[in-house]
Image (tube, rainbow, N blue to C red; front, top):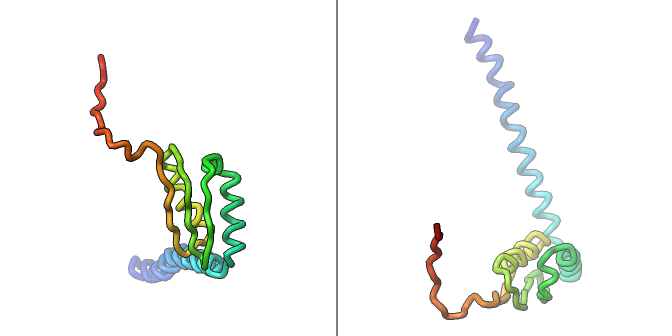
Length: 119
């Protein structure tokens, strides 16, 4: 009786576990096909819209788009903004990102000092 129950339950469990994997792979495919067909002007518009809503928009960073490749230029004082610009271009559909953003004060040449806690 236990074997019969296990045999009847096994296909149901296998079917249930297979569903989320199928749904996740179809979402990835749909996203990939949407980003593959963007023109340079569509990509530029998407990045401009995201840049206007983002904190990094205040840094005055510039970008150009050519054949799906986004090239960033400019200077920022916040190191995280450089990475945010790259992620912004990739999520907008760029095939490649060239990030020439300089972080102000990053190459000052001064050695780093150890931090101490005073008690």
